[in-house]
Image 1 (tube, rainbow, N blue to C red):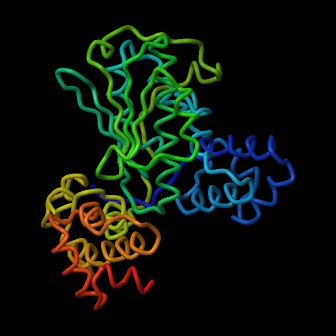
Image 2: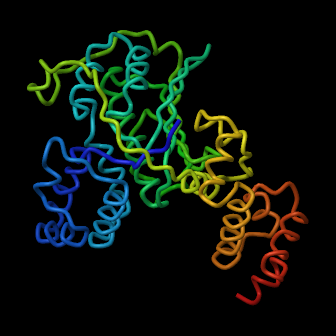
Length: 339
């Protein structure tokens, strides 16, 4: 699949204005001016934000408000009714299985920054959210929280509060972990995925139950038509950005060209050609990013060398030490002492 310049409909972000205003109204214009946006832009029903604009907005708001739970807050406020025409189609679904299939089919109406994939197995249904483009770590984590919490909210509402949903996030435990414990009976697991993604697990016995469909919060959408056309953004061939993101977030593995190509639904040869056209390759990206991650862990943590090696996907500490010394001229232990 091609990579796209990521966007997010502004209607998913506009609740942030209410969050800021509730804490300190004077910050709204101040923050928006910092990122070159206006309240009118965010309130417009058809407005779009690029990933970089969303990133800048989240960083500015988190800094000014002293908060790191804004992705969580957005997730609480976004429901299927915010998906406009897609929301109408989802409300016409009779079962959760049908809803998930419809959602996966029309995911491009929500954002091009992530890919949504649904699979049904004998014992469960799985909906996986994966990044389809490169983005900063803060944006990735905000998206993960937004998606996880929003999915929980919709599931709880449509399934009448039934238990059984499990959501696994690749991001580490947030400082506001206690807030997730209040979202029972859903069970959230952090640091549970080796690659950057959110995995929602639904027991099979719930997939074919009839949905509870309370009245939509926006009655004006009740007569809207189902989604038929999806806005197609302009291609942005920055495969190296996406590969770099996956390599930065990978835990305990070194993703192969084959596994990365499979995530993008292209052949390994095609992905290698795309990277080559951008002046790089998987080996070069992997060496740089693993070295950067190793330096960060050596400088900022007291984790044992062995643990760092395994976190970076090396099969043994000797291989890690050899690779690190080749780039830095120092062993990991010597580098840590000199830092």
